[in-house]
Image (cartoon, rainbow, N blue to C red):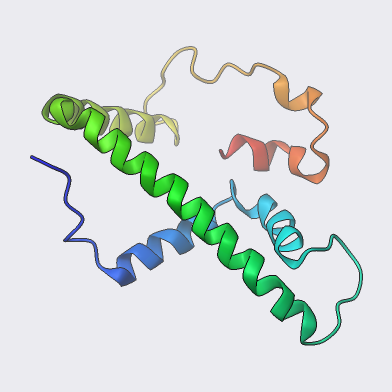
Amino acid sequence: MPLQLDSVSLPLAFAAGLVSFLSPCVRPLVPAYVAYLAGTSTGPADELGAGRRALLPSAAFVAGVSVVFIARFYLLAGLLAPTQTFLAPLAGIAIVVLGLHTPRVLRIPGIDRDSGARSTLPLGPCSSRWVSSSC
């Protein structure tokens, strides 16, 4: 059965995007995105000019990210379509098992092992254990 998106409504897609945007994994990236789109890192912006200058880069950024993710979706959907009846139940089981592991209802040995990479990366304010461990 091919993958169909007919049942996904616009409000549902918007809500999913909003939840994703507000997640702890994305929140530390927002200032960098805004600075990139505005064309400046810091400093005062002139009233209306900054908004107009940011419009074209914002549209190009959204279009570029959308093209990449949509192309990747259709490529993977085409490649994995023959195995969908086999992989879908396996993915569901993996999501349930990992979902039970997160609140420590189910313990999976070795999955909580820390590589120590967080402590060696100079990530500044984004290097706290709360931010990096939630992704």
